[in-house]
Length: 417
Image (cartoon, rainbow, N blue to C red):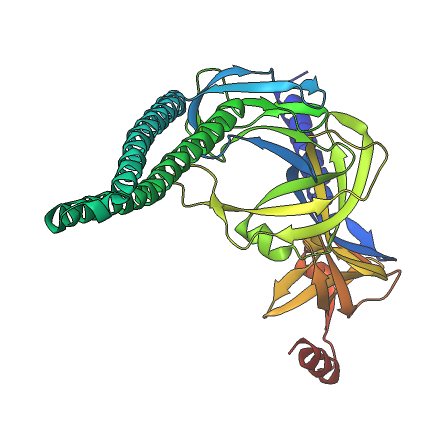
């Protein structure tokens, strides 16, 4: 084959390829309009957790260290030991309370012995006074035989004995009052120290933590380490040590960005799917939305908002911790005209579509209602069975422009406003 013939064949092939390419470019993909269901669905990630969970926390007034902790994911029975804590300061306070209690008891015994000694001394004095009084009374029988001076001395002796008797009676009475007060004071101190020791003993006993009910034990995250609790970790009062979830009812926790959070409303329907269980599906609704967002990580300005959704029905109830893909249905309209967003174009500040008429296209103004990222509801401008273009046709194939009547535009503007 000559060079001239080769060049001619190549030229013809290039022209053929170019013609085909040009012809393909002129072909416009279309979409036939039918009444269908519009759904605005937001897809978010979440995770399953129990509706009700029993929290096992560090006891009040305890600042201790974990000495023993049952393994994560262990099934426990009611009253099984799940954790043992050690609080050196609490143990020290208990030991000190025992010493103070023992001291108070010793002081009471000493006080009672001293009181007994004082009573014995006074009783001896009372006996001496009784004897002296009896002697004086015997001597008083001889007063008639004594001189006036001797009589006077005997009378003074009788008065002295009577005064001593009165003093002893007052001492006994006062000693009873003083001793009663002293005994009461020591009894009060002993009772206080006993109560304190019993309270501290109860607190020490509480360092051995038992399961309040049967269930699957999971370790809580330590507030200092940001990891699950381990032996040797510090804990303090009210800090969670572990959880026992109720596995009979579950919910899903969703962490949404601010934009998605604003689109979601309470009672929106949710359909769940699970990567780990592809055959399983579940259904529920949005229950609550947190009013305040939290940073996605420390010192981050990006916030996520916590949303809780129910699981009201499931093929099989998912377990806690399972990740879930959440299809939140923001809007659902049955039997309406729905077209893909890609078929809608902006022209002269209005929304238009290209409606196919045989081999030509007309520019048609439309009004849209509810929209999603993929689709839009057309409330005016299109009818069922019409065909619209996915891409803008070439100018030579557009033969006319159709605008909506002003009355229709005004009506929908009034509805929108």
